[in-house]
Image (cartoon, rainbow, N blue to C red):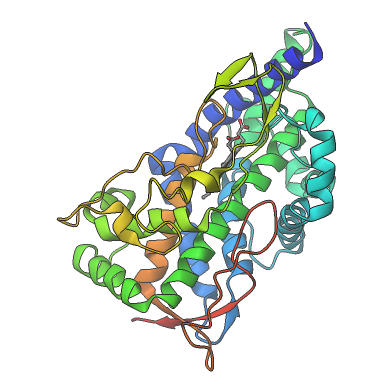
Length: 382
Ligand code: HEM
């Protein structure tokens, strides 16, 4: 077996482990919904009517959803360890998209592809270093009870212990892989979801008539009670708006690099086994032959003539295939519940002296594409 084959097995094992554990702790509908709604309650408390940057609160909220899954508990927003973790994650994502890192990625791709999520996509050692430093990981180890899994770390440690007890050779459940898996879940699951939410709030402030329609539908269908995942099917306009936010936001424009596992011929082009391929998701999300107005914010892309929600094949913000985003269902649930809960309670407007036209839709540079730094005001609707 060569190094690539070994790396593939490691990747598959870690992906399988992360997926099944996420199902138990995150993506299983009811558990995830409870965790997200609890976080919505905290997020709502920190939104203000005076101008504020949406980056910090949204990143805190999405990091806490991952924390609940990974550690089994959330952090207070002012916890210094948590603040360190969140700022490190956002900084790493920003730096990894800088021109310098992108160029070095081109030269070192062969070491990076195929290793995700078992190894780090970019050399974001500080993220896992911070996770290592978080006392909680140590506390979890000290209080581990093999009968009770409080979160993904417990599940990992229990499996590690089992493998050690049965003398499994070459186990992938190592301390190093635990740190990489956890830091990759934070890296992949925090900034992406927060950036999507930030695009959503910015687009609502820029297009108040669309915000009106979302709020009218929410008031008519949900009223003032808590929104639930089940409500989605009765909110076709809101669902179309969320899809359009993800399409236009295109927050993971270059997805993740992969290597071809065999020789392929695609549209007449021969691609040799082992070639690095980078799927450009923006090319499909903005494809002129697929979308009626690819560069405009137009929720009708996802509505039929009767106003019913329609799925579109070219909607691929989570990519596709075997390495499709591992957190897709969790992310979809988060975006829906955070977005609708916020719009139920607040009207989003530009800061005083800034017009809707002034709100800039140019994305910031980074591995993901969040909106450029901006401020909004959240005016209470109650
Ligand atoms: C709106 C939010 C999100 C978007 C748009 C998004 C998008 C993506 C994309 C485009 C990829 C690359 C797929 C490929 O390689 O072709 C990816 C990979 C991944 N995502 Fe997400 N993601 C989001 C949220 C999340 C969340 C919440 C989690 C964590 C629970 C997560 C975990 C991952 C992981 C672990 C991978 C690597 C999968 C692998 O290589 O096998 N993502 N995501």
